[in-house]
Image 1 (cartoon, helix red, strand yellow):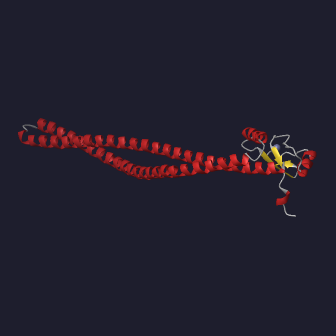
Image 2 (tube, rainbow, N blue to C red):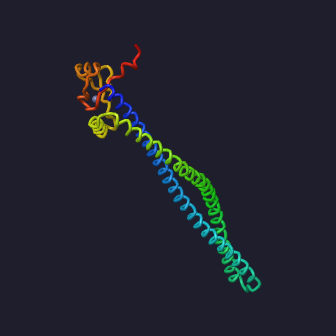
Image 3 (tube, helix red, strand yellow):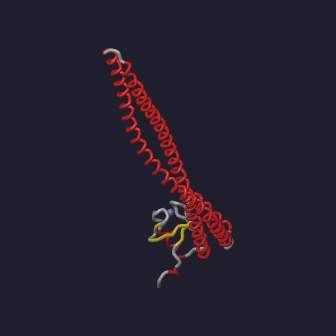
Length: 241
Ligand SMILES: [Zn+2]
């Protein structure tokens, strides 16, 4: 039984290694997914800023057109001064010029405000563009790394599974099956070390008689009364004398 237990230890070690590779793979895929989602959010934000920028440009053109019209109107009105016949007409003309000047001034102020906003948006867009370029290249690198890692993960897992099969063939199939059943039900751990009379997997004390039998190395499989994992004690040969 001692020999079987040592082989189960080897199998458990391989199972833990396989699991850690699977976790590494899963974490890496999550990282890629998160980077992809971040890039998508960034692209959406960038598109929003670009659309705001185009709206501001339209507003700017509109305000500039109003300035042009204002200038035209003032020039046309001023040309009519020579045709003035009386004060009433002069007043009316002045009123027209004043109104055109006011409209022009308003349009100029608006132009300034829009130009300032445009500037801010352009700066923001530039920032987002640089960030997007960076994130794009990061994404490309992650995908490239993934391809390399995938190959490595597959070969490492395949190698360990093959070794596990070979190792498992050295113990009775019913014991191996029992180990696998427990492992499936107990968070991937089928074998538990007993130290200081306690199961190290569930941290609960085991009955003293079970501990004595384990230390003696009886020819039967002992399981933890609490977590049902197969129990073992450290190999005496490995311990210092
Ligand atoms: Zn236990």
